[in-house]
Length: 410
Image 1 (cartoon, rainbow, N blue to C red):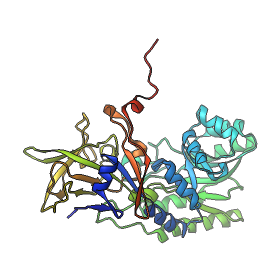
Image 2 (cartoon, rainbow, N blue to C red):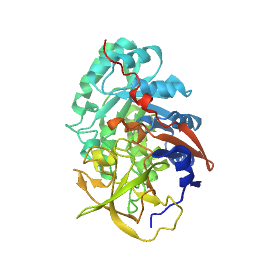
Image 3 (cartoon, one colour):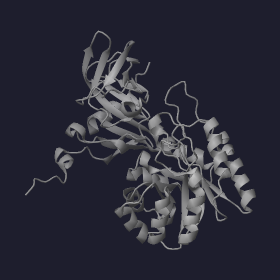
Image 4 (cartoon, helix red, strand yellow):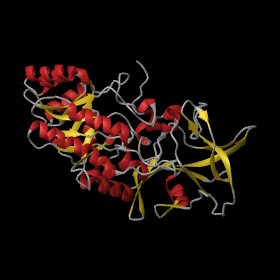
């Protein structure tokens, strides 16, 4: 039965009393463990900070020797803020914007070009520089169509057939292509992984390639029936193709990987409080004080998240029932238990009462990072756990802070 009183060795009732609900909770020990697992296999690990860009997480990554993948000027700014060197960062995007151009002119940040236009623009920003190419191999695969990052429907990367043109553009602009990057989607399986790694090995991008990037997308076991990813097999798929590239080029080629979700998802939880329990002819609803404005994955992808209940009054919970967990937003889609396409489903949870806490697990990735102030709900507090002790790393947002820089006209 999914009944909890503690998480990461800390009382959930104590946390709720200290920080109010809802709140995000991050266990630094879990992040460190995942980093260690990856570093045992891959010599260069980059954190895809879009998964969760909090300064506390970035700082922990820096302390453990993890580099950073940034997809915006703002993400570069965050990484520099915690002490990263510019050369430890790579900017991966399909376009530049004014702010990205400004910061890349000033700082020696590596650049991963995702379009032919970017190559020409990079040459103007940093004449004589070096680039990665992000390649679209012609196919994609993810846990949802919305997470496919390859194939003809994807905006990401340079179409495989356009690589010769891009090599020519780089030569004409005096730019060297020193790295190749390929990523087809979040949650891709080994069949598709082997295809993408082979496509990387077959890519002809000139003689200067020194590093290849396996991208990210490593899955985690969201469901109890999911098997953890075989990291040794994952590495072997990429390393065997790296060796083929070395043979072809006649010099050493390094390999790096850019996990995001794998490093932080299991470390995080979103905790809300039940304020109402409703019955319909079909479902029992637990209505809590957090919604897709704080964790959009179920509404956007139909993503599954394990959940638990903590008794708010310390009682022993007896029995379970199938329930729908939903939030406070003025949207029918504000449901945490749904499948892709918005189909509402139930999840077996302990029999709860108003005032009990609901813990949504594996929310460390794409929770706060994709959150919004929809319906003018403030952002929750963010809480850090290290060695069994908790501390506040982001205060609960006030209404004035939600309004922020808004001004009346005139």
